Length: 171
Image (cartoon, rainbow, N blue to C red; front, side):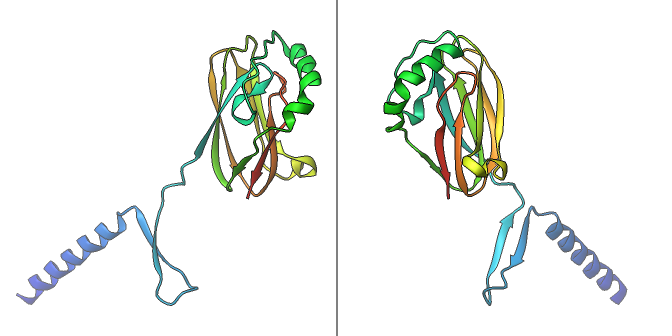
């Protein structure tokens, strides 16, 4: 009779242990406080989406307004920027972000030639900060550019359009 009770107790304990092992959370103890137990999910943090729209020679979300420049090629933008950039630059909106995972969702809105996206560190930090780039944004298409940003100053642009360098501060 005692052997049956021990087997039943052992089986019950085994089921409890297996059930505990199959959960998707993990309990960790924070050694900086006496009785702090945290439950942390094993799921990766979701990326924050930043939507950007390219029109002729500019990104709309960071400029004061849509200037509705009409460009047929990169040379048109070089000329437009040489004539207008000094005054436009004074009104750029700096993107202020926190460190973390981001998806920059870039749309080519009515630019008749393929565009791209290039995000990199500003100045000398260009070599040490993360960067992302890509092309192939044909008229009316949207592409995602995924990156994990760390603290620092960045700029983004489209070398194919070409646009100015727009500022991002991550802190």
